Image 1: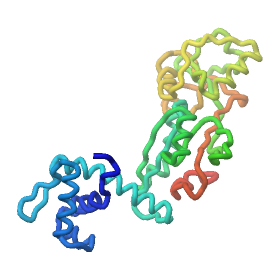
Image 2: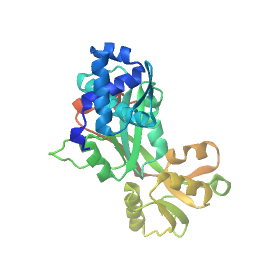
Image 3: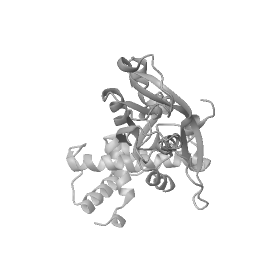
Image 4: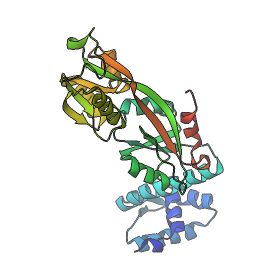
Length: 294
């Protein structure tokens, strides 16, 4: 059976019966007769080659195949309802917010930025990570609602996107509090020969840091370079080396006294951007997250 042979009206009727659990109530909701409804479900079963219901008198019980089909139908028609709500500006019901974030972005920053949505019972979040180029392509294809990145996206006249700054912070040099509490280093002048863990070459911050070191002819001893912020956080906490990163990445370790700030530089900053499609195609709840000054 090919997809074009699937009768989505029959699938919709099956979905209503499966949701309501009763043929009579489904027929009333669909404004059709029970016999017509039964006939269309039988046609769907014949097309799929699977029995979807076990019939015990007037009771209908989903078979294992029926449960599988219902799960897919929930997604199909749930997304259909969501699509209509988005196009018609209907804010009722649960809304899905699909978020992509570049792999080098701090998970703590993402959680802090998403906190209002986490507290909203009408929001269901879908989170995925990847490369900036790959995520932007998914955004252009309407598979994502927003992409969080730590670098701006170039303008594309064929696919206009909005790229707005949603946060900026200075970058800190942190180290184990047991060894570095009360001590201060200048960036980059005092880093020559020191063991360090740095963001990987793909991270926007790394290019800034390397340029500063080159200008000052400083050569720290790079013990590890890490793209993933979660792994960078672990190495900052457990390796004993100095680490260069935004404080939000290790906010819990700083509050707990495991790590301390050893130095900072206003010449090193990480910017956070939210990349979105034009306003009409954005879910309304996303506008609250993008509001200035929140």
